[in-house]
Length: 262
Ligand SMILES: C[S@@+](CC[C@H](N)C(=O)[O-])C[C@H]1O[C@@H](n2cnc3c(N)ncnc32)[C@H](O)[C@@H]1O
Image 1 (tube, rainbow, N blue to C red):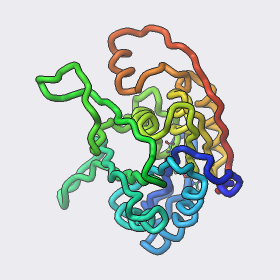
Image 2: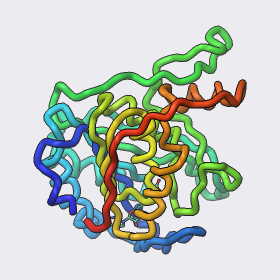
Image 3: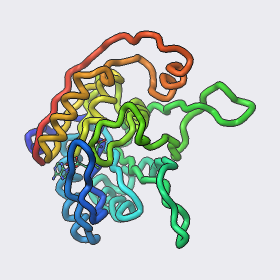
């Protein structure tokens, strides 16, 4: 399916593939296989995706590859092979906080998101996040490469029942930073469609692909619902405002497409 996308047509690709956990990932609305992958098999799975992503990106386009401690170090080498060492922009840390701990090591509380650009004139607009220091309290500052965004908890309204669903606030932040307004965002492993919903709500267009027809059905449903309606401002700021008032939002939808298969 990725092969049907024209060369140099995509502004941003976000790729969130199976991490190689060795567990079948199961939730209320579906499941997917995530077999343990050694270095060689993980890279063999990813390499064709990365080459295709490089082909479809526009000259100012970029890729965000989501992984964790299992393979992030290998993924960076693979991206360097295809995009060149100069393509590296950031090794982002998504610090999410939720989950257990172990008496044997520091608790693992982050994922890695590798940001590579196709060329030197890549699009980037630094996102702003709430400042924490007392001096700047109530104001925003430019985000660093450590993104503190809470994972989706069991009670969250946005939880839609797809395993390893990512928070809209994380995708909102990444998309506004790395894809131009009106630009085209691709997610080749879109799952429940978080990337597509965040892109459409932020005034970008989106294409989603997934192996699972159930994932595609979920993504379509979310795209037709209130989450995909633009509030015209970043989710981080919007959530702060939501707490203050429950005022109505303007509806603004742009086109998106979803499909199954690789
Ligand atoms: C980590 S999940 C993505 C979760 C998604 N970001 C979300 O927020 O819902 C990985 C997805 O990859 C899909 N997948 C696995 N192998 C695939 C393949 N060969 N081609 C396309 N999608 C695949 C799975 O069905 C699963 O939905």
